[in-house]
Image 1: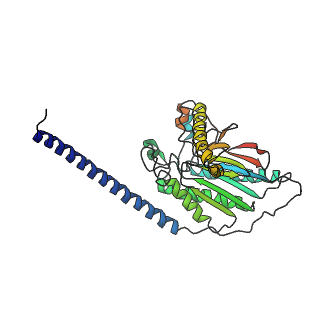
Image 2: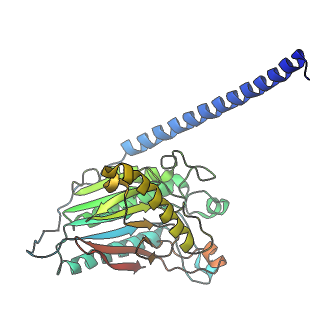
Image 3: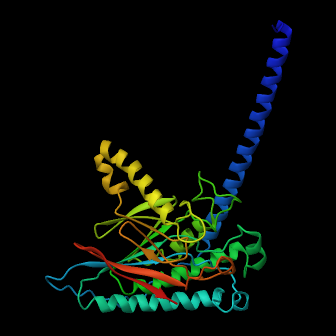
Length: 349
């Protein structure tokens, strides 16, 4: 049995150890808040210095046909990886990528999307357009090889990605009465931490700045409804079809398309949301979803419950090493007011 002085001594040691741990935690928290504050100030200064794009004369003139269905076209911009460089000779000429190629590909996709929409206007009433932006818009510095091979540093990637995205949305806005943009800021490549974080991951990311800068560029374009969602996922209603949009990096998978991982993710999301909806039915439209829409896996695929957009960057040395090939592409589809989703297309570039 311990004597009283021995017990007090051991207790004092534990108390001292706990006090030291608390001091360490206070120091870490203080440092985090300081760095977080610096980041917010940096973002504010950058955004304040942006000159918004000037409104242009809208080319689109609505043609309402009686008895004709209303349809909303959707285009998904995802995995642009601005700043990444892929030399063709490194991967047997399967692909090449840099900023100039990215500009050319986004112009091509946007032009073809507008032509595709105008074709559908021969049959449907189309006044509203929808853009999903689902992350990895920059290459970032999350891997040492990216730091060494990127075309320019991450802050420059942010500027160029925001300019490019704003240009493409600006171009499309001339062809719609309303163009709705939903931008998810939490992603993989733009994160500012070595390992993925959970708390404040959507803010502690260069992709959040891409979104805020794009929003600032488009501030005077009155028919663009730009929404930044600083979160992992968000339910977006398109013509009565509820999409749960996100980047997709929270899906557990390995080497290729993780079919089982996505099915499991949807099952868990559905169960969690159903539990809330059963007790708070008014939340149905806020958190209930019909389909999960992501990027991240660089390969376009589609099913009843989920879909994935292709990447603008295409096959990389990492893909080639693993024996994967995916032609660069961006996905689009139509949403009918009654029959919902149809005519999905992958614009290969």
